[in-house]
Each structure stands twice: as structure tokens, then as C-alpha cells.
Image (cartoon, helix red, strand yellow):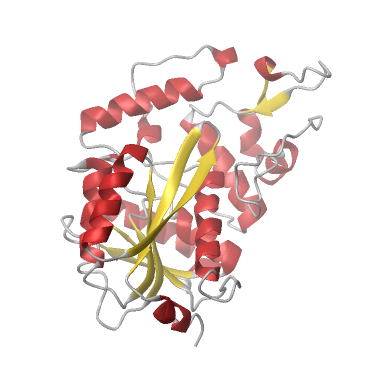
Length: 328
């Protein structure tokens, strides 16, 4: 496979290992199955040299995305065994890595500009899913440890399998089933717990129907023009489980619940954070944060055509933030 001219993805975080796209030659070497899905996108031939064409995969094909993820995790993050069952979300790793890097910068802002690393930096992943991606990336990049929670027993069991098959994760990631889906932090944060941060990719939609329509639209947008693929049905293991995609009240309802619950643990977590996909939800989120007297900030992110942001909040004064012990 000939190497192609690479364009830097400047919208990704400066430390993101995927800013220069995918080296498919290296990725296929590390995970040969990926080669079954890589092709030349004839619609993206470099105008300066017709011999240069961009290798890609069909990002609307869940098997292709899963193969790409496996190759990326092997090549860049030292994860030799990773898989997810059918019907669960297959996350885009560059975007998930951006969340981790931006979170690291946020923590550095209260640590004299130095990113805190190592297992004493403990995160709480709300809704880890079956992929365990945030604990994997946070541990591989910065050595952080995690408590990862979910309301889905199958998701927890798959994460357990991933952890057991990658020994570096065994001491770094613990799993906890949220037995009551009405709650987010309750039953999880105990009085003796201290978390450096929480991390969350909340369900976007307010109903199964809305989620299905969005998934169909997403698949059709991702399919390369050269394949001329359109669908009226969501592909099984691309759409995600109900708990991953929708909940009563949608993204806004979930985040408001998270904010109100977080106010009950003001000194047990330095920074609470969440992704916010829908910009239209921000004003209500800010009002809710003001209602609970939280200090908050927004970090913009972008990947490809998609724009998102992290909203972070804390109940600690600047002096209390500076006094937080990142290591013991």
C-alpha cells in the first residue's frame, strides 16, 4: 500500500495521536483483519497528483469501524484484546481521546500548569458502555485509574472481559453496576470516595424512535459517496443499546439530573464533566449550574463535521482547587 499525502486535522487536540489521520499500512500490519475493509476513495483523489488517493474505510459499516478501533488500540494504546458485542456503541477513538486530553489540560489548570499523571488521579466514568474506551485511553495516555459504571449488566460484563484480557488494566479500572437507573452518582459515590474528575458521554435522545432516526441519518452521512449506500434501517451493532442512546428527557434531562446530584458531593470531586452534543441545551445547562452555585466552564471540541463541547463544573473555590492533592 503506497503512502498518501496526509493533511493535519488541526481541529483535534495538539497531543492527539490521530491529528495526521490513519496510517493504514501500519494499522493493517498490527491488525491484518482491517485490510478487508480498506479501499481507495476515488472521490478524494489529490488534485495536485492524480496518483495520490486517500485510503479509507466505510465508516457506516460497524465491522469496519470495529476493525479500525482494534488496530488503533493495538498500535497506539497497548491494548491487545478488545471487542464489543452486537448492538453496542463503537466509539470514534480520536474524538474520545480529545476528551481525555482536554480533561488533562483542565486538571493542569489547578496543578500549576502540570498535567497530573498516575494512578492516584482517579476518574469516575458515568455510562462506560461495553467498550470501556475512556478508562482505556485515560490509563494508556496518563496512567489514570478509573471507577467505571453502567446500568447495563451486559456492558459491565464485556468491560470485565476487556480488563481481564489486558493485564495493565486489572489494577487500574474497577467496575460498578448502577442498580437503580434513576440515579447517576447515588449508590456509586461513597462517603470516603474522592474523585479527581467525572467523565460522561450522555444519551443524546429522548425516545427510541428519535434515536433510530438519528442512527439512520448518521449511517447515510458516513457512507462514502463511491459506495452509493443508503439505508432505511439502522445497522445492528452501530446504533447502540437503548441506555447508550436515549433516556427520558434526552441529553438535557440526563445532564440536569447529573448536575443536581453532583451538588450532593461538592467536596468529593474536583471536576465534574460531561459531553454536550446539542448546543441548544447549553443555556438551560448553565442556568442549572448557576442554580446549584457551581463554577463552570465550557471547552469546545470538533471532529470532522461534528461539533461538540465539554461542560465542566466544580463546587470548590479557587483556593480549594489549588489545595487538591493529585498524589499521596
